[in-house]
Amino acid sequence: MDSITSFILEGARFRGVYIGADKVVQDILDCHSYPLVVQKILGQSIILALALAQSIKYQGVFSFQVRSSGPVQSLFVNVTHDKQVRAYAVYEEEKLPTEDELTNEALFGNGELLFSVTQLGQEPYQGIISLTGKTLTDTVLDYFRLSEQIKTDLILRQKEGKTRCLMLQQMPLKEGDDAEEVASLYETADVLMNSVKDAELFTDKLVPEQLLYRLFHANDLTVYEPVVPHFSCSCHKDQMKRFLSRLTDQEREELYQDGQIMTECQFCQTQYVFKHEDFN
Figure 1 (cartoon, one colour):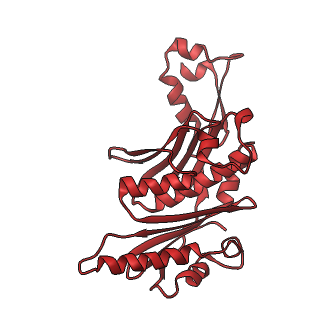
Figure 2: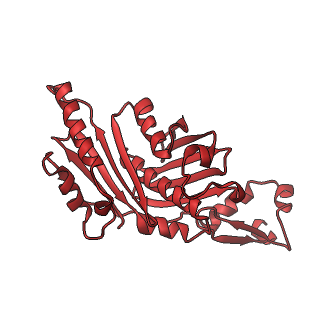
Figure 3: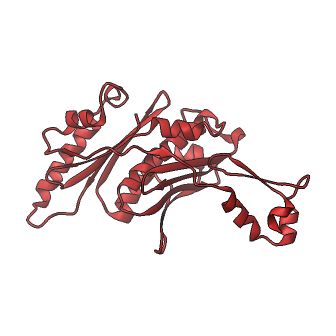
């Protein structure tokens, strides 16, 4: 089930989001021939990127990138403001861990997680954090805690090729709020979120609104209209041509094989062919 379903609790003191993106993830994976361990971690990264993108307001592109010296050298996810998604991974297959070792240490060794937002007419924003904790989820939670200073909890689960996410965040205190009372309400909501069962997350019999009602019906729940994410790649031949045109004649000449330059989009694997006359 593909859905980004936002909700608020306790008079908008807390906000959250449910995310499932089965078709999006599969459409992206269908463009590649990734080993299962790479499929799993890229699926996690896509869902985490959607969760982070949903937590901010922007008109442009949100990027989620892992860079490391480990077996998985790079994960890259783009999410546009209207939830068009694309992603790819770079890895050394012979060094990959087993499918049960989706830890930061096993996959990445030392590395960093980068978030960036590119908006038309504005300076890009970028955040960087070292990979911390056992998993990418731990790193994202540390980012919210250390960089954004937003009380956040997030659960991310995978089962039979599907990935589900629930995220809960505390909003800034309102005038007249009792900090201890709000903290107690957040703790209760967090316990309820973490009580969710796999049978509830991965069934097709519950739509997101029904799942959220099961968890939070006693917490002044408001659920917003779901947004459906889609796989879409923005690459095109003119874009590739502009890149090649910026090279010197000598640099471009070195790329020709049998009178052609063959380029390939890392995101969707679409190939574009150029000849000498394209640059005259």
